[in-house]
Image (cartoon, rainbow, N blue to C red; front, side):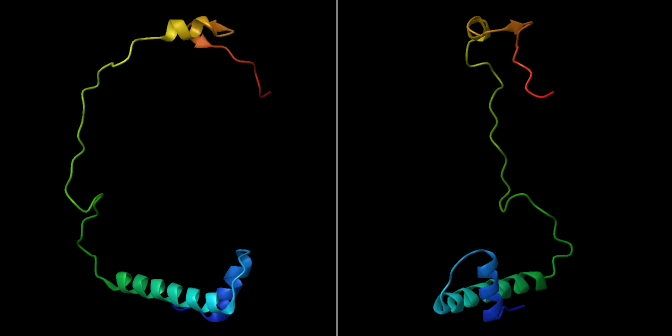
Length: 95
């Protein structure tokens, strides 16, 4: 697939981007290069290749799930306008 100069100018118009003739020609060559790369990648036979989440076989470092801060809920709720059963009460905004 390749784009014509008119198609590039139409895309620019639809995107509300003002481009000169020289910019449109440059953009056309860049976009056509991208499309050629996509066509090359789609031509590769990937049957039998298992999907992977990362290019390298890595595992995520895990840490202990331990509390690192003191419980400040009582102090925070002491200054709240309205609290009930440990929950903040707020005015109804949607009817």
